[in-house]
Each structure stands twice: as structure tokens, then as C-alpha cells.
Amino acid sequence: MTVWVPTDDGHADLSSHDAFVDGPPHNTFARLRREDPLHWCDWDGGKGFWAVTRHADITAMNGNAAVFSSAQGIRMEDQSYEEYLARRTFQETDAPEHMKTRIKVAKAFSKTVIAQFENDIRELCDEILDKALPLGTFDATKEIARQLPMRMLGRIIGTPDEDLPWLVEKGDALIANTDPDFTDHVLDKMDTDEFRMMPFNSPAGAELYEYAKELMAKKAAAGDTEGVLHLILQPGRDGELISETEFRNFFCLLVAAGNDTTRYSIAAGIQAMCHQRELLGQMQTDEAVWETAPDEIIRWATPALYFRRTATRDFEMHSKTIREGDKVLLWFASGNRDDSMFEDPFRVDLYRNPNRHMSFGQGGPHVCLGMWLARLEVRVLFQELARRIKAIEPAGPHKFLRSNFVGGIKSLPVSVEMA
Image (cartoon, rainbow, N blue to C red; front, side, top):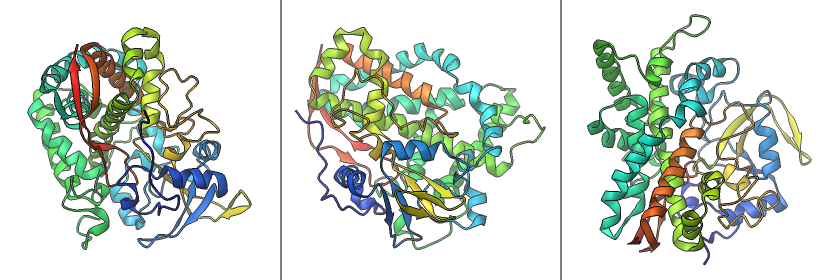
């Protein structure tokens, strides 16, 4: 049975969030890869941009930070320099500034350190599945996929469990700020610039900042020096401290990206299990599958649909000239379905190896800090799910986010038969 067939007409407007409400417009990406792999897109909301859709081109440009800079924003939206400075995270910086911040927190997300969380993750999965599976029919995004990264987020940043639903709600309002199911301040429908200095141009950024200040004050009073938030506040090798604005933005990024990307990977994997019945059997009978399955599920999901870069000088590609200052969107969602790199890319192959997917931004300076945590969460969740069920199938249509930046299934009705 087919996992999912894109329905766009091959000419979707990539600047429109509405073009993604039925999932990424992969027919359009396929046409562009064939016909126009460096495609200029006009945009009514601001300056137009170049769309890069081939895996090989994205890989090359992602690794060329000298020409394709992150230091003017990573999303399509235009910002004044004042807005950029107020809202940027270390994702929106280049070397050496990017590396200064990265070095401070990289150890907390290393493969060795993250591996120590496996028992915690397995215990959380047991609790989540014990509650969800007896329901029989339920929304798998809400009852399973949302739960694990939310609760692990609390372990990573050291927040009380009772605060987590609120934190995730605010994180959703930030990163899914184009979907009216997640925010009243829909980015492309706002008629105010009141929040232009807040992360993601969202009032949720201000609320999260106030929460972070109170949290750190409580930690300081208790002598709590554990966790990634303490690390980011330490002086760098040059003795420089992170600014108050930078800390606010880092906290907002941690809450939003640390939760949403893994959630939507899990949801996409469950959706695939509903339609490719052989996946459950492979998970149940072959331990070897766990070496490769997490990356394939994450390839299939591609939670970050694109990242923007800005050209620092003129650059020639495919007989076209990208001009200095032009916005360039690297469409990871397209690269992850490029059939020149992935055989049968619209099928989930849990044994796919090698799997040079783009979901973590490998090959560039901004490779995802949380990739080891994401892989571990995905592996353990699906190990525990497969152990407990005989069958899983759709119980209604799934719904995607209204976003051309974050790709995810926000609602996934399923029915399960317990083992």
C-alpha cells in the first residue's frame, strides 16, 4: 500500500504556506529537480528567493558557508538588521561566532552523553504507551509523538514536569507560527509589527523569555548548576559571556526545535507503519534494523523543510547567477526525495544504507546539535511500540501543518491491536 502520494499539480507556490497543507508539494520539487534545479521564486511578502532542489547542489551549498551565509536569517522572511540582531540564535550566525556558542553546549549533546539517557527514554516510552495504546483508537501525534520529546525536553533543560505542556504550547506557537491551530498570531496574516523584536516574530517568545529568567533565578537560588542552560551561561574561551538577548533566543530555540522536530519524525514513522504493513514485522523480528531505521524515519519525515542562506558574493550555478545579497533556500524536503540519491524515495526502507539524508544538515557548520538525541528517541520509541502491538492502521485522514518551514503531521488518527 502506498504511504503517501503528493497531490500538488507540479507548479505549487513555494512561498505559500497554504501550498503545504496537504504535505510538501513533492510533484513540484520533482519537476524543479528535472527542469530548473536553481529556480527563482517571486514572493508577494518580500524579496524573492532562489529555490535549490537537487541533493547534490544542496549538499555543496550547505558546506560552502563562506558564500552562503546564515547571518541574515534562516527563514524566508525579510528582517531589518535591527530585527535580525534582536531575534537571532546561534543558528543565524557564521564562524567564528557560531562556533563560540556551539562549543559551550556541544558536550551536552554528544553521542556519549546522550547514550546515557537511553533508560530514561525507555521508561518514558513505557509510560506513554501504557496510557495511549489501551485507548485503541486515538490521535498518535497527540498521545505518542508529542509526549516523548516534550518530556525529554524537561530532563534536558531541567524544568518541572507540570510546566511542560505550557512550554510545548509556547514552542508550537513559535515554530509553527503560520498555523492557526497553534497560534492566534499567524505570521503571514498579522497586521501588527508589535512582536518584530521577539524570536520568530511571536508573542510566545516574550512569554518564554520571562519563564527562562524565573527558571534560572530558581536554579541559582537552589545552587543547581546542572544542564545545558548552565553551560550556555558560562564564559567562553575568550571570557565573553552570552548576552541576555542571546540567552533568551537560545532558550526559545531549545524549546521549539528540541520538541517539534522529533515529534514530527515520530508521527511520520507511525504514519508509514500504518500503510507499509511490512515495517512492523521488520521491527519485531530483526534487531539489525535498528542500526538504520531511525535515519530512514527521519529522512521520511524531514521536519525542517528548508533552511535559508544569503549569498555573500555573486555565484554561478546551472548557467545562472546568484547575486550578492540574494536569498537562497536549500529545500531539504526535496533533497530527501531526490531519486538520483535515494532509490524509490517514496517508500520507507528501514534497511536503507547508506542513507545520506539532509534532515540534520550534515556537511555544513550548522549540523543539528540534537541529532543523537533525535536518533535515540526515535529508535527507542519504535522498539517499544513494535513490541506491544499486533497491528496499526489509519483511523481517519491525517493533517499536515500549515507551514513551508516545519513539515509535520499535526493530527494522525490510528487504531491499534495490542499484542
